[in-house]
Every structure is written in structure tokens, then in C-alpha cells.
Image (cartoon, rainbow, N blue to C red):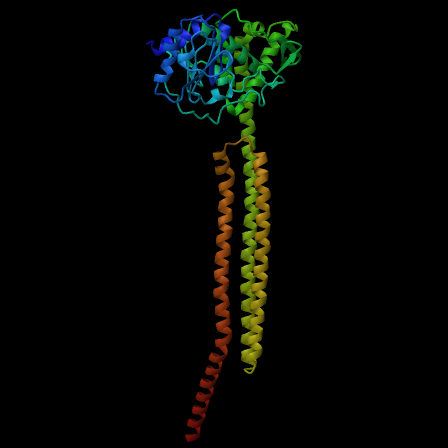
Length: 477
């Protein structure tokens, strides 16, 4: 019986024409004409699938009219063989054309490894590894997750009116190790150059049967996007430029300075029939060196703006803290005014006691009125101050979020939020202590208001008894 390596190789390589093999991500379709290949060889090759213990692979054998038949009935029949492949973190391709055709599929975002039934040295990109396959029917792998800091060039960098020329995932075209050799590598590299070169332009669109790209500098320069590369070393220059460009924090700024440099160097090639890849190959290295210098100058300028933003933020935070602190002072002043009112009421009560000791009920009513007025005023002031603080904090949050974009999240917390939160904590503690102090003061006031008349009457009785005793002593003498 044939081994698994010879199984797929036999079915693909020993048929009349390559057009009889069609392959997609999920399946491989092979047409074999009657009497074109040994029936016994086909039967032995297809039996490999029956003997495989991998349930992720499946095969369907149909005749020329697409009716399912068994292996025993394939003599003299045109065969349409459909092989279902597993799709996951590992993909399988039996043909180079099938592999190249599916390179733009979204499913490749979650792939770790791609196996191709060809002889070549393996190579890896920043998305997955591409390796030769011996045809063994092995399992797939779990799907991998993508990083959250990846850049999509179609968002904010390049305007793609074709919706397909600019790669949504440039990382699958960026080599991470040594290059490879052979037919598959050469074709993959040509496609990678075509894809990556569209990231270094301002706009891509279709015009008749051609694809056009433009560079927007001081003037708009238009080129043709052609699948042509006469110098394989250009891929290395292109890869270096794209890797420098794809930094999430300031990809748009890097793209802008690089486009300006390219436009400055390419203004002499302003010809609508010029090839973009050929033109870019001449000036990309010089443009990238200049763009790096321009970007450093831009970073210094942004740093100056960031320092100014920090100073403005500090001033704004100081003003915000002053507003909160002023409310704390108003609360404290209200508490002091309340204490003064209580003291004044107590003084009036003492005056009434000393002048007339028959005003107990009137004094009690006066005590209740003083406490009610004091508590009502302080609670009303507290409500107004707290409501105003909540409103200001809501506006402060939206204002800070929209203005101070130059700071990182950690810097913003340390420089802006923490002082304000500390001031709010002071405000809350002041309210709590004021409430406790006012309750204690009110209790003391009430007890003093009620107890002082009794103490005063007792003192008067002692004084009168002492006076009577002294008078009796005088009479006895």
C-alpha cells in the first residue's frame, strides 16, 4: 500500500492537467479521467483515508455525474474526488496555487502553521510559519488570538477605494527569520511586495483594468500598481519600512512623514504610466532615512506640547482643588455660624433665667426654634454645596478626557485624578466631622437649656436659706 506522502502527491501529479485540481481553504477537488491512471493505484491511494484515524479529514468519491460511488466501482469511471481538510490553527495545502490563492483569507488571522505539499525550506512571518508537508493526515491546531495593538493600514493610513488591495493584516507578509528558496518562496515574495507596497501610498483605486496609487505631498503623484519585481532584495527594504511604520501609538504620524519624503523624492517621476514598485525601489531607503529624522523632530515637538499640556493641567487641577476647598471652608463656616447661633440662644436663655424664673415653657419653645433654624440652615448649605460639587466633577471629567490626550493613563491618574480625589476625601471627612460635632453641640445645648434653670433655682434656694440663717443668728444675739 502507498504511504500517505505518495497518496496526495500521486493524485495531484499524475493526472492529465493541473486545471483538474482545485483547492480552497476547506477542501481539495481532483478530477481524474477514466483510464488515465491505474485503477489499482487510485484505489490504494484513496484507501489511505479509510485507514486514517484522524476524523478531521474526510473524502467523497463521485463519478462523472457527481453520484457517490465506492472504491470497488471506480473501474472505467471518471472520478471527482473531494477531500475535506481541517481548518483551525494549522492549515493544509496540497498545491502551490491553492496556497497562494487563499493568502488573503480572514481565517489566516488565527493560524499558527501552514503546511504545503512542496519541497522548500520553512520560513516564518509575524503571523504564522509556512512549512513543507509530507502529506500525512495529521490533526489541526487550536486557533490563536491576535494582539490588541496591531495596526490596520486601511484605518487612518491608506484610503483603499478597491476594498481589497491594501492588506488588512500586513503582519502575515513580514518575515521574521531567514528567507527561503524555490518556486513557492519566489511567488510568495512577489505577492508580499505587491501587498506591502500599497501601505506606502495615500490612496488606491481602480481605473479601467488597472490599479492606480497616489502619493499626496505638496502635489498629488499617480502611479500604476503592477505585479512586477526585478530585484528580490527590494523585499528587505520594504519590510524594514513597514516594520518601522506599524507602531500603534503614532502609525499615522510615521506614515505622514514617510509619504512626504517619498513625494519629495518622486516628483520627477510624475507619470501616470510609471510603475509604483519600480519607482519606490529607487528612493525608499533614502525616504525612510529622512522620515526617521522627521519623526524624531516631530516627537520633540510633541514632547514640548506634552510639557505645556502638563503645565496647563496642573493649573486646571489647582483651580479645581480650590473650588472644592472653598466648599469645605463654606461648610466649616456654616458650622461655626451654627455654633454661634446656639451660643447666642443659650445666652438669651441665661438672661431670661436671671431676670425671670417663670419662663420654662417659653424657654423650651425658644430652644426648639433655635435648634431647628440652625440645623435647617446647615443641612441646606450642605445639600447645595454637595450638589454643586457633583455637577462640577461631571463636567471636569469630560473636560479632562477631551483636553489632556498627550498624557498616558498612568500620568493622568497621578497628575490630575489623585489630587482631586484627595480633595474630595477631605470634603467628605469634613462633612462627617461637622455632622458629629453639630449633633454633640445640639445635645449639650439642649441639656444646658433644660438643666441651667434647675441649677440656678438651687443656687437661689441655697442663698435664701443662708440669708435666713444669718438673720436668725442676728436676732438671737
